[in-house]
Image 1 (tube, helix red, strand yellow):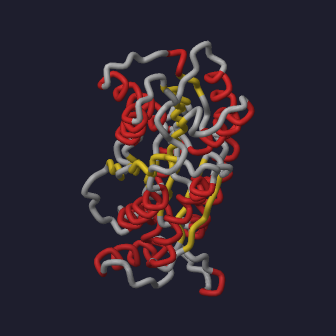
Image 2: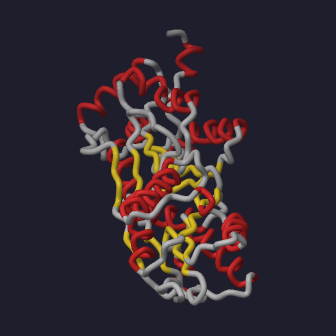
Length: 339
């Protein structure tokens, strides 16, 4: 290697030669103790052999970071996931960098450029499709990846953290059936998301198990946000034979249904029972407090953070696919239908 080449040697190049992650090389360079002696010796030898020039301590960038990447940050559930990740990161003495890439190629490229300069410990993607070019670059950099609520089939090597969406939806629908409801409307989430499809399937299974027919007219396609809940609720209530209960597959859509019920001159739960999904903090203060399926969002963030830190330490993960349990939380928005 020439003198000019030695000046250009990168941490990523040393990581490839050593067969370790970029964060591991960064830890060696920064004198951190959480590296095995054998790995440290191998990395130090390569740094010396290739003439890597260390920056003075005052100029070094801290490597104690987790990158947490969302498509968008305009949902309350994102805050819950961030809270879980930061709880684990704080306990480990590292920081969290939160980004939103908005499904735009330019944003993803800018994020990737910024991430390279941070020598991150690992990346957590939330409800994302890991595009092949991005996936290939992260693999090349030996940066561990964990996906929370993947939108499609995740890369085989990337662990995923989710919730029991099908079981939660089944339980919510069974709750309404148990109260005596027979026409139950359903407002679905984005069809490209695996969690949305699982919730629709759980609703359908509960109906069929109870001997009730699945009616396409009672299903409205929403997007998890308030407006689509309001629109879906309004259309369902305008049917010639409207439902006596509506199950919205997110809390935000359920609160949109509340407004549709109010504008129709009706009341929850006297005229229409409503169930949501997520158990966001604000729904216990809605009027009436919302019956919902608790999705352990903060716990999902915590498990994702622990998993990515274990991968950064080259530890083996027992299960690449983790689903945390959902739970029915009954409040005041559901009641038997009027006789």
